[in-house]
Length: 194
Image (cartoon, rainbow, N blue to C red; front, side, top):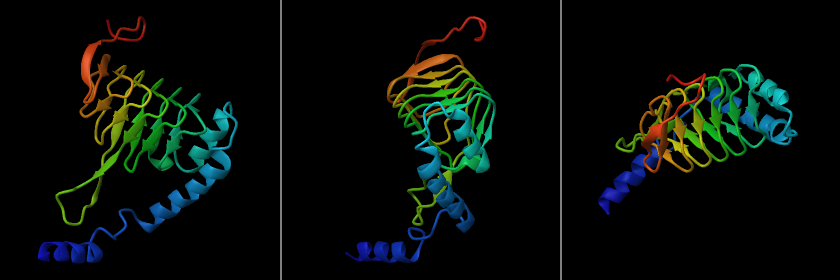
């Protein structure tokens, strides 16, 4: 009982109630949420240039021909860096409290989730810990796959349907399972190293 009382006191007085992000960060994300709801999400599917413009207005760095679908979610556009021809499909979630970059022709399929942060569960303050991440050129995060915080995806790597990447994925390798394990090498004539 005494332990529960101490924990309750700490939670009300400490980090559990403290915001993890600055006021300016929260204001930008609030404004982005309004723009997302009113202008990004309801835009017609083929309006990729329009959605790219909206993301750029909030600090995203996007190459040409990026296809971000209307129901894809980007948590903080200012932390998004995409090379040319990157695709985020319907309901893909990019949770990027730290910078997250995508190489050319990287694909994030439907309902995939890329997580860029976690909490220090061993600290009484339970602080948020954000990690930068990179998804390499020609990599493919398949539908409903999950990428854990701080995991990098190598060039040409494939994370299979509903798989969970718990550690960095090697280039030009196909992974599947939870946790994801390598199942074979990937070879794309003219692109992948032979």
